[in-house]
View 1 (cartoon, rainbow over the protein chains, first blue to last red):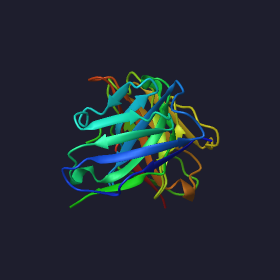
View 2: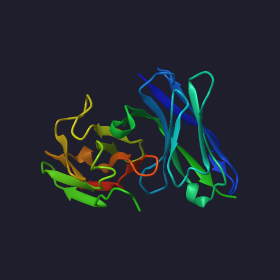
View 3: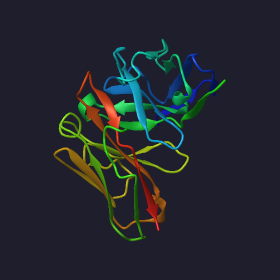
View 4: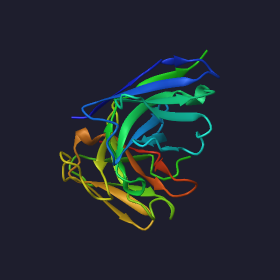
Amino acid sequence: QLQLQESGPGLVKPSETLSLTCTVSGGSIGSSSYYWTWLRQPPGKGLEWIGNIYYSGNTYYYPSLKSRVTISVGTSKKKFSLTLSSVTAADTAVYYCARRRGESSSGYIDYWGQGTLVTVSS
Amino acid sequence: QSVLTQPPSASGTPGQRVTISCSGSSSNIGSNTVNWYQQLPGTAPKLLIYWNNQRPSGVPDRFSASKSGTSASLAISGLQSEDEADYYCETWDDSLHGYVVFGGGTKLTVL
C-alpha cells in the first residue's frame, strides 16, 4: 500500500522560502504513469494544485505560482520536494503531497498524504 | 475564484438523493475527464469518482457521476449522515501549458 508523508517547517517568515519534502513508502517515484504532485488548501478554503513532477524529471506548475515554485525528486527516488520562494501570508495553507495517476488530460489523484500546515508569519 | 464552478453548499435528509454540479469550459471539462473527491472534516481528500463516472474499489454505488459538454455532476443517493463532507470536482485545463484545476468545493450537510 502506497503511503506519502509530508515533512518540513510549520512556520515560515514572510519573504523567505518554504521547503517541504514528501517521503514515499510502498512504492517508487521511478515508476512511469505517475505524476508526483503538490497541492495546498488555505484554512477554510478549497484545494489548489501547485504542480507535479514526472519520474523523468519533467515538471508542470500552476501558472500563477510558476515563478516561485520548484518541484524536484531526490536521488533515492523515495522523496520529492517543494520549494516556494518569497512567501506571504497568502501562502499559509495545509500542503498535501499526492500521486496523480495517468496522462494529464485523464489523470486523477489516487493517493494523498495527510497534509501539513504551514503558517507564514513573522 | 476557481476555474470550475460548484455551488458552495448543498443539503438533504437521510435517504434522499442530492446532486452537486460542476461547471467549466471547453478548455477543461469540455475536453478532459472529470474527477470527484470527498473531504471529510479534518482529513485529506479521497478519490470518489474518476474518468467522469468510474468508482474506485470501496466507494459505494450510492455515488455516481456524469459529464455532458462543459458540465459535470455528482449524485449521491440514499444519503447517509457519514456523507456530510466537502466535495470537489477536478480536471485538466488545456490553456497556457496545461494545469490541474479544481472547483471551489461544495459543503454537503445532511439534515
